[in-house]
Image (cartoon, rainbow, N blue to C red; front, side, top):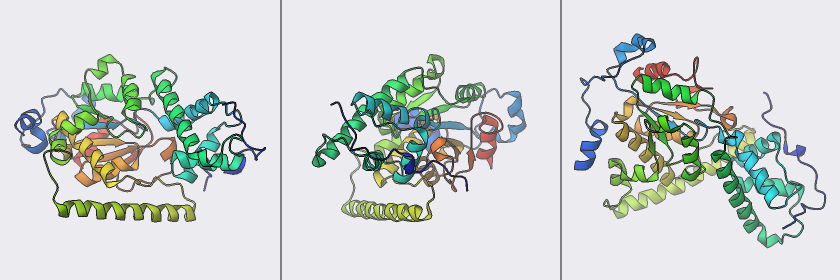
Length: 355
């Protein structure tokens, strides 16, 4: 098996520590989400390549896109660089993550950023002036500076969208396929996701629908399950608590098994609340696109989105990124490597949606 990344032994040995210098409304607005007539046909003008699929075009299609890992491979082109910028700003001259070191830290920590910092500084040595009882606050400072650096990076022109992303969206527009971009559950937060989406340009932004936290909460489904007007019985609350406990235990077991097998996997560490937010965003996307959930296709970059799509019966394809290049997605309808033929195209999504 090909080794994914260099082991942590590639990190320099300690040199005395790292030195530091310092419903009516909703049913009118979203009629296709909850009442759908199979006899209603789309009126969109299909491109010549799609005429082959005319038999399935009376089933509407909408495309839902995640941001991180799909529109931009953030954890390949931005996250590592943001950490290095944070180290530099804090005067940690001996701290620098090459790509092999970064990928190995991700693998060993399952992507947990505090765990990545702990592994790294345990290996090279913590800043000599840092008291042991202040390691936690030190890591929080690093992560805050890293987040600020990542925001600046994604706003700059130095971090591009994935090749073919813009052309894929343009093809969807030409075929009358609604495009929805999901910022609500982006791993780095909506403040990172929004600048990435803006790289699509004003013309595309005027044609797509962006689902952030507020849009998800204001959707018909969001009003029902998140809000606030709907009270939970004691039995429901107890059931939710039981699910949380079971989820935590399953996460622990999965990580231990993966570590023993020395496999790089993408483990679903999403809490029950987190999963509900993703489900809400997906359903909101279908509502705003005015297309039934089974006729939408989610293009996901990570396991939580795939799991949520499976839960509600929404077809899903995975677009691999650098960090998910070896992960398994058994419940996805397809796992693809890039935008454009022969991988991710509107024609291919039509076939997946019809099967």
